[in-house]
Image 1: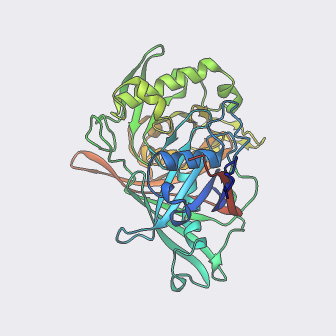
Image 2: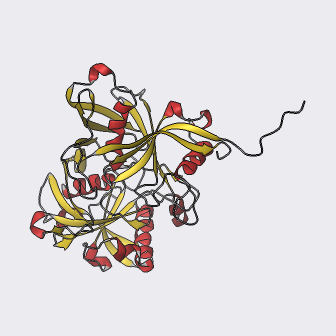
Length: 402
């Protein structure tokens, strides 16, 4: 007897958790829960994550997936027990392009780093004897994309992750429990003119030639995530812009992308301009200005006297609605080093913390930097975020999609 062949591929059920971390959201997986073909890097893994998120979507909406059609919500995370001494888990982050066919693995997501620590406890990767009945649990995370250590201080109540609380984070509607993150030795070790130094060109400020734009002063730094900082005034902005002012202006987006490409070339991240199309996650571009009063996207008045400077940053080709966590590390580090554009915008001098204004409000970040043998190094950057499980269970994807 002939066995009928199914005409349609069934859907697979894959255990997953949907989490908010900081001002981002993503789909979290335990490595061992992924289909065998997706447990290793490659086309199958990328295709699976794209299908989960709903990409590539020429409509730009990700309607047929878990993504939210923004750079802050088109993300996947894979967590696994760490084989690296002194670490609890490995954290791998994929930035899924919304409308084009690729997953960017070139950098970290600082916001979802917050959720990675909480997820490690939720997923059972932290031994029960490490969990105090009440109090913080220290989770040591190996950030596998960039090879760095992140220490998450996750609050625990009743032996479980505490998710509710009164910590308010601008850019997130509701308060939650505070999670403190330490980014240890956050300078990137990638190649560049400076051979992987904190400042790849070897300079605190460079003259950056940008085709079609002109020559701009720029601070290019590799702390947290490779970032190109320019002065807002030099590109025709005040640093108080909200998303519509940039994201609805095609000329503005093109100008900022040209700066990003020029910075990527100067930092040695790419060898040809066309390579930037497949490296949209890094570097970031941010523009800074001295403290200025403005009204946030939520209608909140931000007073100049309450902040040290204003910063706006681009993520995946759009102005971010708040601030990426990794870019906040770059801001903290650059602000702590006298002479960078970020430091000068904040008023100059030595400082180990700044509060900056972003489109959704304000954020305080700190960094410990020092000059060693004529080279600046950063030992640690610190910031507070929050995280919460939004949904847990299974995601479903067609079995022939990867």
